[in-house]
Length: 77
Image (cartoon, rainbow, N blue to C red; front, side):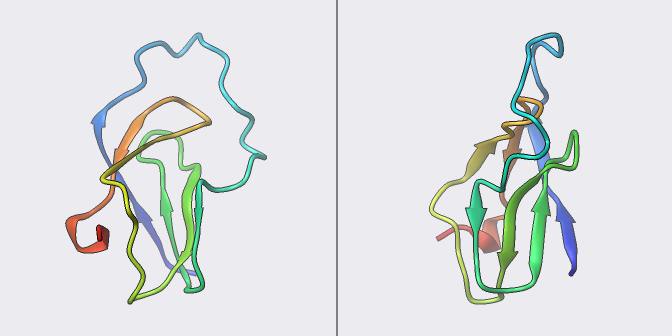
């Protein structure tokens, strides 16, 4: 499965805050084969996104580390 690391407009503000475990599932799921990873900790933010699929948000906060991740413009709806 191809993976794309998302860009970080904002890194986590406090790394001492307890975050969701890495075993939690992705925030978004698609029917394709590309995973989009947190640019800070590599948590899967969006799993299985296909070429024709889009996301309805510009940014997502990683539940594992708290970093703000920006989806690429071509992926946004």
